[in-house]
Image 1 (tube, protein in one colour):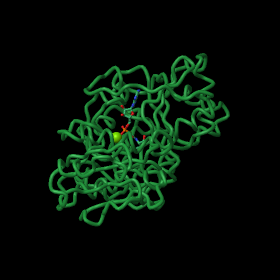
Image 2 (tube, protein in one colour; image 1 turned 30 degrees about the vertical axis):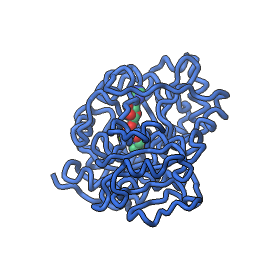
Image 3 (tube, helix red, strand yellow; image 1 turned 90 degrees about the horizontal axis):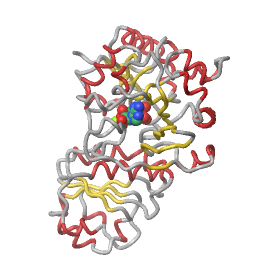
Image 4 (cartoon, helix red, strand yellow; image 1 turned 180 degrees about the vertical axis):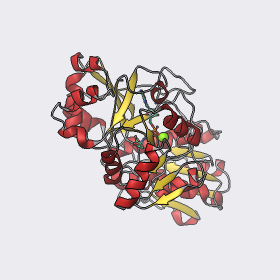
Length: 367
Ligand code: TXA
Ligand code: MG
């Protein structure tokens, strides 16, 4: 199939809507990453998403909803129940107050909530699970499309399954050209890593994926820090969202969970990784010590000032560039000392997943 490349003019938005209404799928920009969208109420549309991405059916999708519900006189919760997206049981459950407080604080924006699903969400969206992941993106283009449609949009990131998420229309083209009906170009994504996913359960909260909203921000609204969940090493339908290997470049990526210049055995480590001239460095900030970055042909610095938001915005782009660099065989990434909060928690999560299951050298093992 020929993939149409659309700009974000009103005419193109109308065209994207017509394509979606005819059960085809379109890549759209969100504030986090580009999503591959299809009618969330329509099984045939959703199946096309899985097949374009080569995504296994046990990995469920996020349903994106219009900001029109924020001004619904019924209130967001009741509007979503009425529209068949959420289960009526949520209204009477102990999770209701957290749901309403989190929606008020973070929607539209990069927070996805996993809650009991309503009758109009087909099994294919949720992998047959009784829950659905929903979010309200803040991106103007995505919202313009939703505003013209009568259904919500299921949308995973617009990459082949397991690959690096796209943050520009060009990245989407590289991944999915010829496999989807259209791509709407809305420029580079402002946040650059995917939404935070949390599951509401028995009045508490479990963090399934760190992202654009930090645990501290969530705690400031709900009064407690989300619990975390161990990731799994294989497909496990009972715990969607927890797949271990993801966001991976094609080349091996090794991660040092600290600044590269504070690693005690750096020389030994570099020797084990092979020919240094073939090593691509993905650094969270400029190095402070005498460690000479310029001797590495290919290096990228996520943020000149060590800023988490800027680093997140650059992460997938730079990872992709090093992956495509013909002079690079192996990628070595580092992290700041304190990478458990804010955007660096999301960056650390993506780098850890990208580095998983690669052959580990001896000194790398010691890390
Ligand atoms: O920022 C984002 O969230 C982007 C943009 C496009 O909105 N979307 C995105 O979708 O990252 P995707 O499919 O790449 O990741 C969604 C994750 C999956 O790992 C999936 O397993 C999890 O959400 N998920 C979906 N439904 C779930 C459910 N019912 N329970 C637990 N996890 C779920
Ligand atoms: Mg994804």
